[in-house]
Image (cartoon, helix red, strand yellow):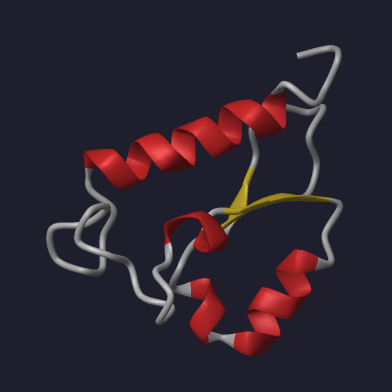
Length: 82
């Protein structure tokens, strides 16, 4: 997924648990200059999205979205100009 936040962050990608099931895409995304790997933050020890972050096991609920938001905020704070 290619997201454009601002002109200061080109090639910004957000990785979700779905991307990890597609090895070629996941490998490509991990090589980009700006990457937030939410997959590693959200998956359980089996590689699935646990019920604590999802009601249906596929889509992050508010708890999962808070984890993603925290990761994005931490990422953005690494830039002095933002």
